[in-house]
Image 1: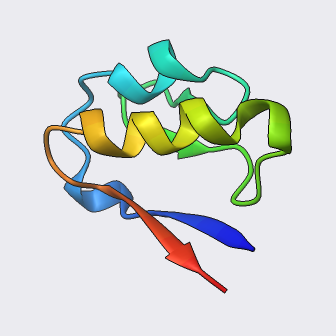
Image 2: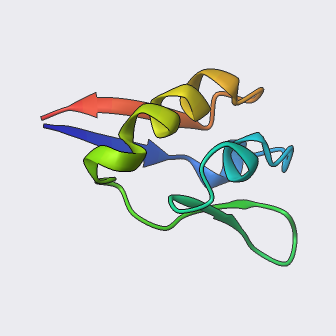
Length: 65
């Protein structure tokens, strides 16, 4: 099983994660990324993995459990 981790202090607010998978990522009023779930379902897992690669500040990571 995989789990996603977000390090909000590293976030620069580019919004690439939100644009890639809005069911998993959101943004607060300051533009900082919010992780809506750390265990996405099978339907959103591939796009969530892709969002990790797009993050310019490397604030997102994928962990294997």
